Each structure stands twice: as structure tokens, then as C-alpha cells.
Length: 245
Image: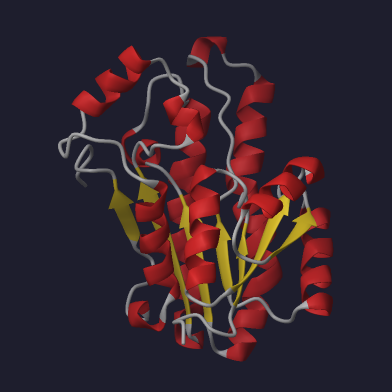
């Protein structure tokens, strides 16, 4: 028996490095996995390379209408969603004086508006059921800021403001809402950074290494379990001591 047997878990951005690890861990714990993808070809390749079953729905999480259609499809095919992990995100880095309005709005829309667009579809179902878990993936840079990331840092900081407010609204209904803020994790994206730069990053991490996607997934899985029923409105940092708040 898994801790999440008979639970339906939606993970946005589930085909990325951290997203894949979250999907795998929740599936290992017994959850039925649903994820979103804009690139259906990439999604099919991803699905065939995984050892767990999943449902992939074409959805642009920055579009409220798309998210509404996704919800209808999930409920028709599978049932009411118990767990939402808002993990979708992009970067469009650049110093503030060189940042154009497109780079700003793309990141705010994809990283922050999506948390509203997705969560808004499922909160009522959770409160009516008297059970639900929402986990929002933020970032160390939402806590401390980062040069060249005014857009990303603003979006990621906004995610935790959303978490704290929504947590207060749904706490009495058996629904918890939490934020996880990873530091630098050894995903393909980070490993693609020049080794010299990567070593400079690692030198700033007290534990002396990058995080593993599986470590973030384990934290998310805990927050989704019944064991974490006391935790809501929290921002759990997982950054190897790089930023202590």
C-alpha cells in the first residue's frame, strides 16, 4: 500500500528535470499521475521513457481557458484531482535595464499566473471533498533575489504570497497549500552551464554539492501525504544552506 493510493495528482511541467522526479516519486507512492505539456511530441517521447503510467494533457498553463478545458478532461476521464503540484516555469534572464516587456510578461504569466489558472480549477473540488494538497514550486531566487532575474525572482516570490493567502482560506476544509523553494539542482539545464560557472555556484553551497531532483521530489511527496496535515502556508527551503531564512 502506498501513501497516496487512489489519489489523482496533477503535476504541471512534469516532463522537466524536477517535474519528472516529482511524477516518479508520487507514482511510487501510489498516485495516479497527470501532467501537462505544450509539446506533444516531446511528451510522447518522455512518457515512453518512464516506468510509471501517466496521462498527458495538452495545456498551456498560462491560459485560463486551457486550464479549464484540462480540468474538464481530467474529471471526465479520471475523477476529482486530490493533489496539484504547480511546477511549470521558464526563465528569460537579462539585466533590468535591458529587459523588455515581453521577457517580463512571459515569465510572470507562465510562472505566476499559471499558479492561479491551475489552482483555481481544483480548489472547489478539494474543499467539497474535505481533502486536498497544493504544492507550489518556487525558488531560492524568490527568497533572496538574483542578478538578471527581476522577472523570475518577482514571480517566484509572488508564488509564496499566493500560498500563504490561499492556505488561510482552505485550512478548515482539509486542504493544505505549501511552497517548496529549491536551490541549485542537478537538472539537465544546470548541468548544461559551463563547468567553471557551475563550480562557482557549488562553492557558494555549504553542503558542497548541487541538489538532486529526487530530493525535491521527496519533500513534495511528504507535503502531499497525510503525515504533513499540520503543515500549511509554509515555505520549505531545500538549498543546501545557500540561503537561510
